[in-house]
Amino acid sequence: MSEWRAIMLMLSLGVLWVPQPARAADPLPVDPDLPQPLDQTMLKSLLKNPPFNRVVDYTDSLLLTGVAYVEGKPLATLRDKETKKTYVVSDVPNAQGWRLAGASIGTQLRHTQIRLQVGEEVITIRYSDSLISSGKPPLSTEVKLPSDAEAIVHDSSGKAFVRSSLYLSEADRDRYRNGMSKEAHDAYRQTMRDNSEKMLSLSPEQRAAFAKQVFDKVTSEDTGGKRK
Image (cartoon, rainbow, N blue to C red; front, top):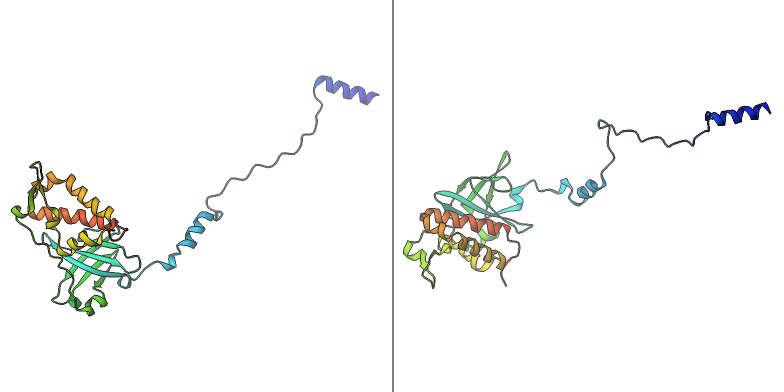
């Protein structure tokens, strides 16, 4: 009975210890200096686009499709043989970081080439063998500046505007009429309409440079192909 009396006394004083269930241990903090678990999302991305399949020889993947001079500076258009995407390069790096390091224009296509700087490397790009062997010269990429009388016209309300297509080369005009998607064609026209006042204030050389800049931007983003 003395033991029961001792237990009852401890209960009345609130000092009886009752064992508590064991609690799961808190997770250990992640040590940033140790290897981390593999990110499955990153793994899927690497499997989809393995770095070993990336293009490293641009001379095999890019073709020269045209060379033009605007304000005395060369511009070149290139086409990726696999994706059919077109790129424009000049002495200013484009969105891909490519820069035109030089151009050599020959009397024959086989003698025409450009030097393209990609990072620290400078490579030579030429016209395709099929174009050279066909014997058919490409459309002229030279820009012939029209006179104001030829380029400036008026709409039905009498408002003056510049016919920007006259400031494009023969090759670009052919692509504008036949080689662009309807969306790209309309985008070029709308951009030039929005800048009609600017075109009127520019010199002929500046008009050609601006028209070429807008045209190249639209064509570089065009993935729809020919208009239907």
